Image: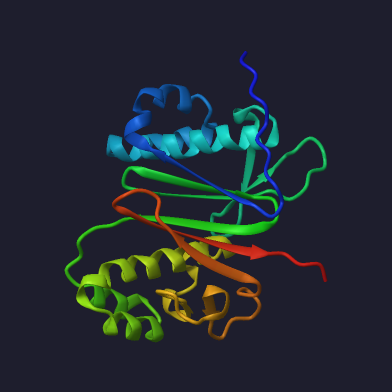
Length: 234
C-alpha cells in the first residue's frame, strides 16, 4: 500500500479544496470503494448518472482528504449527523483536537473546507442566467438585501444575487440549521457593506456570535462563500 504523509493544518488557517467532476470520472470506481454502505445506497438512488457521479466524487474525495488530515484510512473515517443533517467525525480511536469540515457541490464542482480552529460552512453555486433575480430575492432574502439588490445596476445584479445566496447558505450550513431557518430571518453584508463581521442576525439568540462570512471565486461560472465561527474560551 502506498504511504502518504498526513496534511498539516495550522490552527489559525482554513483550507479550501475543490474538485471538478469531469476530470475525475475515470476514478469513480476507485472513489466508490471508499464509501460506506449507507453512502453507496444513497448514490444508487440517483436517477441521473451525472448526479450519482457528483455524489461519489464529493464523498469519496472528502474521505481521502479527511484521511490525510487525520492520518487514517479513508474508509475508516466515521460520521455522525446533526438534527439537520450536518456531518461530524466520530469514532476516533484516541482523543483528538476538534476538527471541523464542510462540503458543497453544484453542477460539476465540489468544494471542501477544513479547520481546527473554526466552525465552518461552505457553499458553491453554479451561476445561471435567471430571468427574475429581484422576484426570487423578494421571496427569500431579507428586506435589507432586497433593497440593496434593487439599487444595484443591472449589469451587477447577477453577481450580487449569487454573493448573497452563497453567503446565506454558507452561514446556515455552518450553524447546522440548514433551511430549517428562513433565509429572510437574517441579513449578510454585500458588496463591501458595513455589517460587522459580514453578517447580521436579526432576532437571533447566540447563533450568530463570532461568525464572519466571506465570498470567494472557485472557478469561472461559479460563486462561493465560506462562513467561519471562531470559538473563544469562556
